[in-house]
Image (cartoon, rainbow, N blue to C red):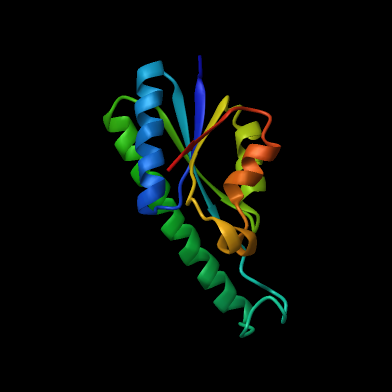
Length: 147
């Protein structure tokens, strides 16, 4: 059925549920798992960030985000491998999470994307947008959304 599953995680409690479900599914199917954490780019222009930082400070902040992201995907890798699932842990740097998820799924030849939905409704959804909705709308492969 599915041979390679991409699971998106941000380390939150809700995404951990999606990770655990993806590990269960991968174990049941004998599939590989690709654990993805999308890290943002630091705002560079005056209008994007409230306080402009030096190049060294920006590099330090981005490195911290990458280190924190690496810990998140490495934890998924450890958990999956303890359950007999082959896991590839990756980071992607992007300001648009949905685009990064879809691109990673294509690059790693995933045949299923697993992700959590925060379940925002009404004005919050309108104002904050929905990365899950964007992935559902634009993905060419199946998407399993968990809440």
